[in-house]
Image (tube, rainbow, N blue to C red; front, top):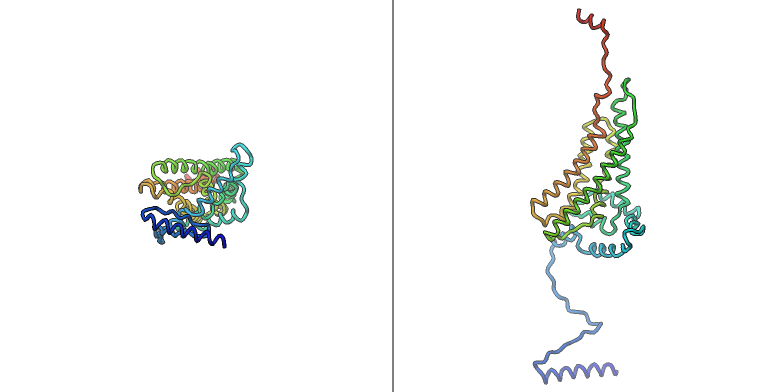
Length: 303
């Protein structure tokens, strides 16, 4: 009752002060139980929601900041690099599935990567791809020359080192160059979307998974089948890269944005076509038996 009387007294006092001083400014402090007045914001149509889905501006940015706060260990400690491999099997399989089934209008980074970017998947995908290309390339060379009497099969172990150099250089140097380019353009044009270097490496690593079964099927000694397979793999993985990095450059100059996407797809095409041409489309005339003609047969043929 005392609290109620005090509240009524305060309200009565405020009313009396207002009547005595009409020009006075009254300040009202809301209690904890009172809800603030809703301020109408800008109307958001389907276009804004679509941009949020495509660009990842809502909860994904908060998740990224929280993830960045977790990585507080110094970079020279083992705990710092351990966070890059802190991923479970379900997340890895989910990201592989996302790289095999790209969804138009959806951002691969926001859907699968941004919550917890990792290096575990890209590292083992690249390692598996290296051995798949090297072993399949040796088997392909063996099947091409199978049945030739003068051909002696010798395993080419150097293909493992060559494939490792090509794959890992592509999976690290191209993302590094792309990250530097996006940082340079973001300093000139305020883009809505920005990717970290770890996220770009993660996207490139998972986009290479489609080439593992493709490299195994490249053993088939039919050039038409091989080129069909490489076009399918290039279409799937190239679309993942294009749809992921287009939101990061579309606010830039139109020509620069298109040139960036074309360069990304071109380098990806160069990798796939180069691996097919070097490791699988070996010249078939190197080990063909040479025809020897006896001298007496030559004389008889001349007569």
